Length: 186
Image (cartoon, rainbow, N blue to C red):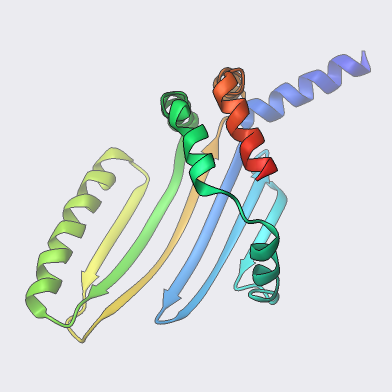
C-alpha cells in the first residue's frame, strides 16, 4: 500500500511538473537576477542568484581540465540533428508560458540605425505577444547613445510526464548515446 502511495505521489509530481522562474535586471554593465526551480509550483528545489560571489575564479581551472575535441563532437552530432529536432518539438508542447514580461531599452549611436532596428524588434515582439496570451514584451528606443538594457520576469511550467516518452525515444537512438559518450569522455 505504501509503495502504491509513493508511485501515485511521483505520478502527481510529474504531472503537475516543474516551474522555472527567472527574474533579471540589466542596467549598463550591472546585471542582477535570480533563477528558481520549483516543484508542485510552490516548493523551491534550486535557486541561483546572479552575480554570485565566486564568479570568475573556478572558470579558468575548469577550462584547462575540460578540453573537448570540437570536430569529434560535431561529427558525432551530425546524425543526431533529426532526433533532436523531434525532441525539441515535443519539448515545446510540454511548456506552458505562465508569465513572460520583459522590457528592453535599445539604442545605437546613429538615430537612423536605432529607429531601423527598434522597428525590427517591435515586429518580433508583436509576433511573440500574439502567440502567447501571457506575454507582455515591450521595447523602447533610446537616442542618447549606444545602450542595451533589459529587465523582466519569466515563468515557465514544464509538464515532465509528457516529456518522458520523447526523452526515452531520444536516448534509445544509438547515435545519441554515442554523442553523449563522446561529450562525457572528451
